[in-house]
Structures are given as C-alpha cells and as structure tokens.
Image (cartoon, rainbow, N blue to C red; front, side, top):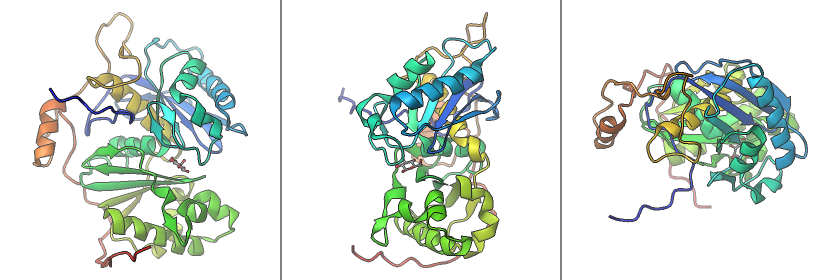
Length: 340
Ligand code: BGC
C-alpha cells in the first residue's frame, strides 16, 4: 500500500457531520481570551461565556495562565468527564499543533507546541486550530453557511483579517488570505477592524478599500458566498451599499462566539473521526453509559458529485442543496488581474 503523506494540518470535520454531547471551546484573540462549553447538537453555548483580556505581551506562559483561569471559571462546579473534548482557536497558521506564524500574538509561540502548552494549563488534551478556521466551521455547521455547497469564503475582520475557505462544506485549513498584497502593503494593515480604527476611517472610506480587497478575493477564488465575521460584521447594514461583490455577503450568525463554537466542534469531530486526532481518542461519555456522545446521523444525499457520493457512503453527511442566498448576484465581469 502506498505510504500516506504526513498530515500536519489540524483534522478537518467531515462535511455535514453532526455531533451531540458537549465540548469545550477556547478562543484566543488579540484583545480577549474567551471560553465556554458548547452543546454540539445545537451549537448553542451550554455554559456562561467567560472572557478575560489577552495579556500583553501575549507570551505562551501568560496566555496559558489566562486560558487556565477562563477555563477554570467555565468548568467551576460542573461534573465534566476527563475526556471532554477541548479545542482552542489561535490567531495563526497551525501545523502539528504549533503556531507557524504570529502576526498578532507574541513570537514566543513559534518556539513551543501550542497543544502541549495549553493542554498542560487546562489539564486535558486540546486541539489547536486557526481562529478563522474555527469561526468558519461554526458558521458552516450552525450558522450563515449551513448547508452551502460550492466555494464559501469566511472573513473575520478584527485585530487582523482571518480567512476560512470551504469547498463543498470541507475546510481548506490555514488559508492566510488576510495577508495578500494590496496597494503595496499587507491587506490586513489597511482594512482589518483594528486598522480601520487606527487609520480613523469612516465606514464609506473603509468600505471602498475593503471592497477592493474583496474584489481581489473574487478574482482569485470566485466564492459563491462570502460570510463576514468579526467586529465589523454587526455594522454590515451601514456599509453594504458600497460593496460590489458578485457573491452575496452574509453576516456571521454567531458573532463573538463563533471561534469558541468552531474550536469545540473541531475537537469533538476529531475524536469522532477514525484515524483523526491529536486529541485524546476517548470521547465524552455520560457517567454510566459507555456510548460515545459524538454521533453521526443518517442524512439526505448531498449533490451528486463523485466526491460527495464517496463522502456520503462513509460519513453520512448532512449537507443540503445550496440554500438561496438572499441577495441578487450582480453580473460584474472580472478582468484578469494585472501582473505584479
Ligand atoms: C493571522 C491569521 C488569523 C487572523 C485573525 C491574522 O493576522 O495571520 O492566522 O486568523 O489574523 O486573527
């Protein structure tokens, strides 16, 4: 048998997989460290969402201590099993449980295994995943992208620009499209939420530049749907009129909880997927019941592509036909981008 290529990416949930039980989600952002328990059947938070400010500098030790405090408060007084899945979203590329880039977090993270440091801090195995990938998984499972096939691009516009790309419901991990070149600069330094504030841009001026950024995304990826998350997404109504994308734009549904929800889901999906995870292979079970709480339900057949059929036979995904997108598509021709 041919040798399998080494996989360094975090395990990606099977499109359409449905889980039940609880999982712990943690989200480390530029301004806050947040955590909560997530009800995997509904995507709702099943505990209070606890938040503390991100320490500065955001070194591994300092952030791990904050995570320990936040998670300690989430789990306080709760009877959770030792095998409760735990996932943590971090603002950088994740390979082999480690951060490979650190644009908005201390570079000390490049020297350590994030999964080991955070796992030691909370006393249980943890799955590390890019924060935007986590947010995307949440939106594709329970939110604005649920049931969407085709190419879906989620953008989180906050301290940085996070991006998550899905093809027929499957995540392409670690897309770093917030750092594409724009006007000779890293796009994130021009049009992220933090850059908008730093540059003192009003909505109109920012939206015009953001539209230029979106135009680049469309030229390269031709998404069928764009989901907008992060702080600016709640203000979409104020600047939508200046956005000229071909693809419809929808605001994220879960806003500031999507990173938590997606990290929790990814960790639970990893333990439920054969051959998967770098987290503990035992899944959360209710005391006295030997059954895994991570289950897959039978589902309607997805679109009849060879890939979808294969996946359906293995994992009984619940990917529905593409949903109506709510905004009329504008016929905007895209010329070939000029050579750099
Ligand atoms: C990082 C991404 C991250 C995004 C949002 C960017 O600077 O490179 O990995 O997803 O910020 O936090």
